[in-house]
Length: 138
View 1 (cartoon, rainbow, N blue to C red):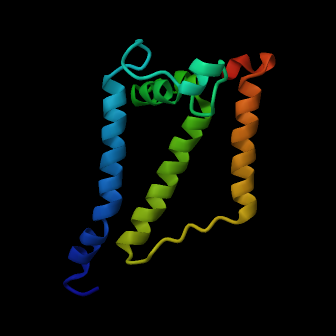
View 2 (tube, rainbow, N blue to C red; view 1 turned 90 degrees about the vertical axis):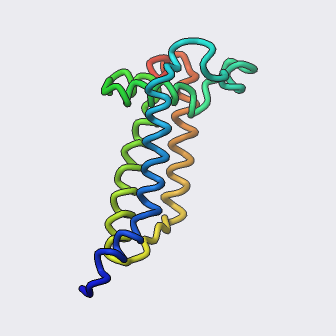
């Protein structure tokens, strides 16, 4: 590695760490301003108009609980969001390691993976709105 190596690696890590700082800031805000208290955030328009829980319903409550280390409550508020937090963490780590090594990470999921993700979100949404899926309600 040349003398410029560590400095170049630090520069390459600026964007991944800026994204991490933005996400941490958002979690800090949601961790501070409790979405369990009415009036802090707008209601989900789909839930308000139709009574149907969308895949994101409960996401803010999930983030608040997650930020406070209440992982069971976070899963109860929105299990799909918690899975998203884990996927973000893994994706960010791969991105940061690749950037530090001077490589460009390539996220090119196969069409089957994208279709499976969409099917998972649709099934999650449908099940949480059926009577036997009440355990998935936020």
